[in-house]
Length: 145
Image (cartoon, rainbow, N blue to C red; front, side, top):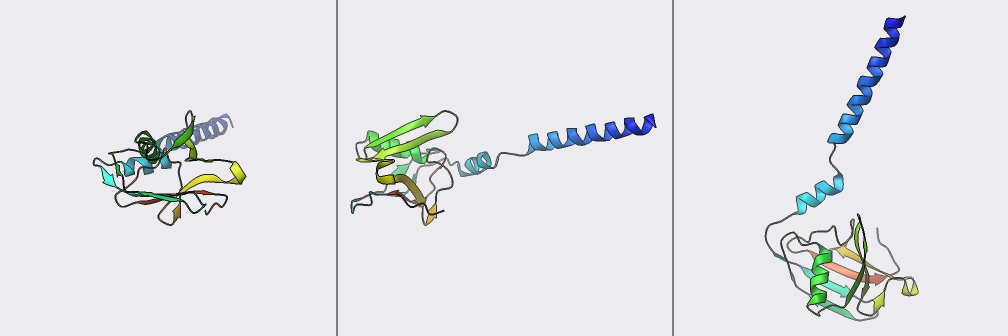
């Protein structure tokens, strides 16, 4: 009887150890996606800012190696091509809160971006633009997931 009890406890401990080990070995999906997107050369992207009031700005900047979309936007701001404000969230990244005179929350609209026709899956500080990307920032209430 004692032998069966010890054997049962041993099996439970081995199973728990195996599960914990597997969970530690499983890579973080977001980190894997970001690592796969890393690149070593600058690439040209198409960047459109749609203020949703008829005003649209277009740029074709070079995105530096491994530069995030947020860093690209920040650089455009420093070059006085785009007026930009943002808020940092430690451990999460940065959130663009204002482009030009349009600020998040005014009239229920927020800055959101798309790559091609696809709504962004990650924040701008996590997205690494790729060659030929067509990035569109829209100030809108609508969220197209």
